[in-house]
Image (cartoon, rainbow, N blue to C red; front, side):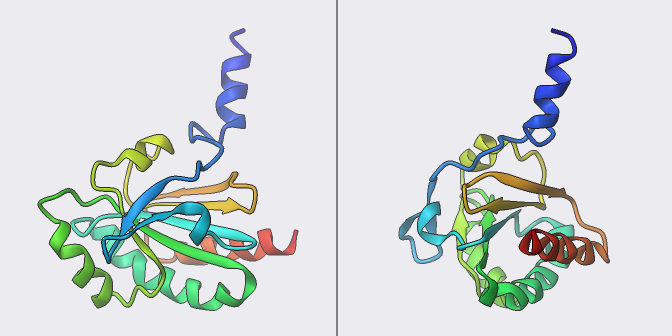
Amino acid sequence: MKFLLPLLIFASGFGYNPEVPNFRLKNLNNRTVAFNSLKGEQFTVIDFWATWCKPCVKSIPKLVEISDEFEDQGVQFIGISIDGPRNLAKVKPFARSLGMTYPILLDVNSEVMAKLSVRAVPTLLIVNADNEIVYVHEGYKAGEETEIREKILKLLSE
C-alpha cells in the first residue's frame, strides 16, 4: 500500500484532479457559461490568474500571443480570474488592458480552482479533448512561455 499512494499521486498529474468537469462560471458579461461550450477541438489551455498577481501580469501578454498562434489549430485558451468580490470590478479593464481576446471566466469563490486542485496563480492547465489534464505549469518566469509553446506543439503532433 505504501507504494500505491505515490503511484496514484503520479498518475493523477502530481496531485491535480486528472479530469476537468463541465463546470459553469460567469463570464465578463455576467452570463453563465459551461466549460464544454468553450473548450477547443484539440486542446484547451486554462490559465488561472488574478489582477493582483505580478507574475500573471507578465505571463498573460505571452499567453495572448500563444493563443493567437494556435487558435486555428483547435487550441482554445480560457482565462479564469480568481479575484474575489472586492476586485471584481477590476477584472474587465485588466483583461482589456492586457489584450485578452479569449474567454475570461470569474471564479469568485475559487470553487473551480479548488475542484481542480490548483493551489497558486498563475497556474496553466492543458486539457485534451477528453477533458483530461495532460500538462500543468505553476508560476511564471520570463522565458517559460517557450516551454508552454513547445508543449502545445508536441501535443498537437502526437
